[in-house]
Image 1: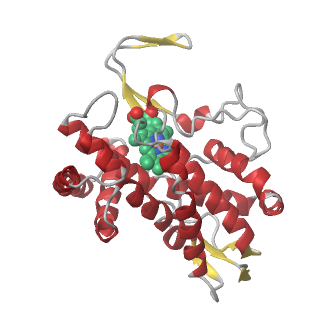
Image 2: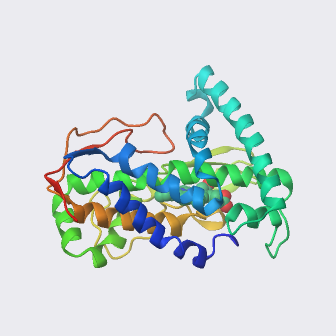
Image 3: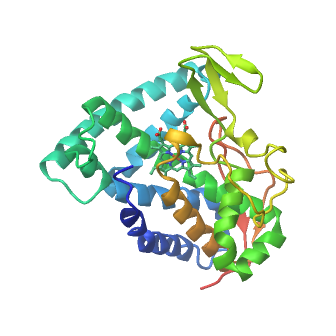
Length: 307
Ligand code: HEM
């Protein structure tokens, strides 16, 4: 948390705006884009590498490793042998890379998150080496595999609710933040997380025994009719929207401010710049992952790209 300072995140604002602009400008004179491949994936990846301190030329390797590792967030029984093998190989390769990067940053610290973690300028002291490597891996994977789905699920939902899209277009400064919050509740990128109970946990009239594996269905909680009015309605203007999109408690998402900033900037630009956007296929094809939900491709056609 100490490394994710508001100054550091806000310092990325202009880079995010410029990256969004460049990705959309690249579609000039074209009337279609794959929102995932052409926009929603490259954006957070560029930004996370810059924030953490991964040299841009090394990024393609992370793409391969992180898509293999992310499968391991699903229940083990749903993974094929090949997927387990690929994930194991990716973990080894990523770890070797990280060890070298740690050594370089230790010798020559820069103004980035990895240098801060390696040098250990945290008030609670330096992380042990194994925690350091695990944290670096987690940050890179989280930065690669989540915000892409927030932007894509957001645009998909807006294209299915064109009244909201038009309102966002007319009034981006008022509506962009609540729209992103509502996407996090209504179609969240992280559907569930798992835990192992350390003690007996009495909850809602049952006791979960110590040592049990528990799946926390965050997405279902965010649609609990006892908690949210009209939970299945996509309604950015709702009053009380304390969703579980970024988890809760001690493990609340470290990257939430960054993900919010990227998604707000992205959806504002998409709503303004794509003239008369429409979906080519609905539903789109989805990525094979139960824990992280989002389309693999989202083909969007439009009449022109506004400046
Ligand atoms: C839309 C994008 C994102 C969503 C929906 C999301 C969601 C979540 C959720 C639900 C958790 C809780 C996990 C748990 O309780 O087990 C979490 C934790 C975490 N997230 Fe994110 N995240 C996003 C983006 C990011 C980004 C961009 C980063 C990194 C820069 C990041 C880094 C982390 C880390 C390190 C944790 C673990 C915190 C801990 O265990 O203490 N996340 N995220």
